[in-house]
Length: 378
Length: 128
Image (cartoon, rainbow over all chains, first blue to last red):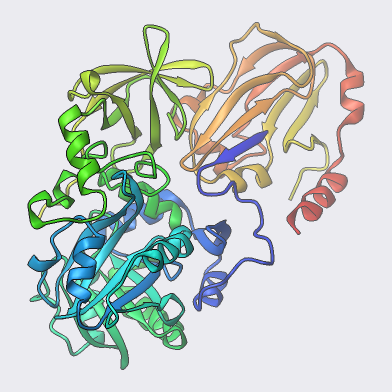
């Protein structure tokens, strides 16, 4: 047997990897640890399918402390972030978050980011672990008004994601902050288990839930308090394996898969994060030009109709020629079939189009469909 | 952990000899590495293979593994139950999760395989 995996093939992690403050909890819970972007992270505890279903029906707790956090603050910060990112930061009020990006001048993705408006002239950008260094180098290289301070604060935060329909019920007894009034993509500063926390109603699973930015030295205590509070609700620790299947069902892009330095927001159907009318920002002109040319390819969802799983890198074939590529593919625990996302020619992008995928030399039939695969009932 | 009367490969397959037939499966170590199995693709009965040929694939949520036959010969039976219950490989890799039965053509193919003790050591060494 020789295997290849998407998030590491389960090879034991090398000793040089970084560990989050929750490492001890993962080992105690029997996690399988793998190298993810230079971090020794739990890919699963009991199993991807169990953890996935727990998040869809009850709740799961994820350690995503490897994510990066930058702050941009001081007089002029609003204009700086407005020019740096394509979404309209002026419309973001303090206490709110939006999804955005760092784009090259060619309009392609350096990274996708969450932008938190902490104050009138104070922002936090949450970036992918693998991109912390290039993102920071990129932002640092840009001309910045003297009053605007850019800081990489990634080492000062641990990040816990409590996700699932029971998340609010589990978290509420541990905090004096009223959670119900926090809107989706809103946040408050408060305490969890008597420790300071930024409580954010966000996630990467397609479920309701909260992400907790806490001090590294408090992370373990908060993790344990949450696991204890969630015991009766069926809370389980959940790994990066389930995080990937959950986000895929929810049709959410992952850097290095659906988006990278060769793809634009138009390609990835992320038009809604681009506010062309807001004024200039990096990549705007290139995006205008690309829009005039028209999209040559589009991101689509697909369901495999024959047997097998079409994974990242598999080619989309039409008339014997490669015309596209699978960006993510997995077996969906919710739908119990193989699903994925792929770039296809704009002509094949209509939902319901039959496509052929080359899976290790064998043709597999699939049908395109609208994203997301999964949308929770509210 | 690993049955004493089986032979093992460095690719984490096991072989149980029954006279001129051999049953082939993957080891408990292999199923743990893969995680939850969701698809198994097996060869057709009657196909003849050389030792080391790929005979199918096992897919879990996160990974795909190719299966190789350690023995040359003709496939005489496949585990039909895996089509509906691929998780048998996780639940009982050494017995109910078997993959194929092969009528092996060269018993010398068996000589290069490890016994349970050697395989156990092999797995331990691979871990760290």
